[in-house]
Each structure stands twice: as C-alpha cells, then as structure tokens.
View (cartoon, rainbow, N blue to C red):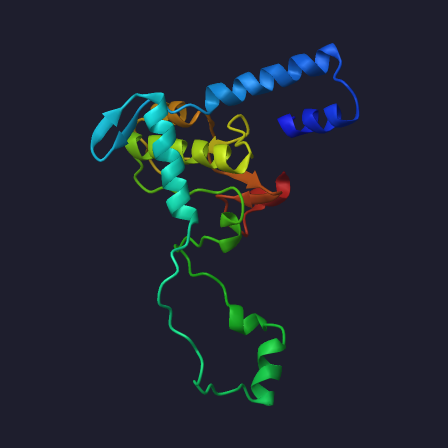
Length: 198
C-alpha cells in the first residue's frame, strides 16, 4: 500500500486505528529507506544532512531545468517526401523472411526486457551495485514509486565469485536459469522437450 492511498481515504473520512498504524509504518519505512548517510561531493565525503539535501535538490533542479540557448531551426529547409508506393511498403506487416532467426550461440536481448524491470550488468563490482542501489533509492524518492526488492531477483550468468555479497547490497534473491519470465522459458533451447514437460 502507498501513503497516497491513506491520504485519499482521509479526504473522505478519518482513518481507523489499524489504518493509522499502517500509515505510520509506511511513513517510517519511507524515511528509513529515503536516507543518504554519506555523499561524496567533488571528491569529499560529506555526512551533514542539510548539505546532502541541498546538493541533491540542486542536482535535480539542474537536471530538470532546461537552459534556453541557441538552437538550430528547420525553417527554410526543403525535405523530400516519401513516395506513395514506399508508404504502402512501410505500413505493411513484416514477413517471416524479413525477421529471420538468431544464429546458434548468439544471445539476443529483446528490447522488451528494458520496458520495466530488467537490468543487465556485466562484471559488476560492489561499488557499481551500491551506485545502482543509490540510483534506485533516488528514483523512489523522486517518483514516489517503490522498488519491491522482495520480488527482485539477481540471475548470475556463468561463475560469479561473490554472489551473496552482491545480493546483500541490492537486498534481493538469487535465481538461476532455467526459469520462466512472464510465462516464457528462459535459459532453455527453444526446441527442448523440457519446455513442454512443465
């Protein structure tokens, strides 16, 4: 449940004791998870809460503020148009021959994995994972959304030396291939009988 849920409830009526307790726990959890104890600013570690808050605010203001300066314009430029025959060819469905299939031994990564919830890291070390965790915490603070680490899984490919340490940093579970993702098998040859036995 989100804090906004309880705030919407409060608009229409007062919260009962159980709802009030849940809201207090959510706020406490948010405050606990929304805390940066140390921030390196220009190479110097800083622990002062006020300085850290000011730096984060200034960072996001700069990030989200667009400086208006000179921009190229398209005025006066002539562009070719697409011929009607080309338009028809572009709007038709792809044929199977145009799509093809991946070669053996080549791992393909679908762009659909990146839509919501997949992060691929190659040769990640502790510092990189701490940076990812900090980025996810900033995302939570800015967006109001929460990453559910209890449902998150780290899937090592090949031999990963310190997998337990890495999952400890992220606070997620360890999973392994083969597995299913959105009901589809991963880590199994597409023509394997194992797919049909499950």
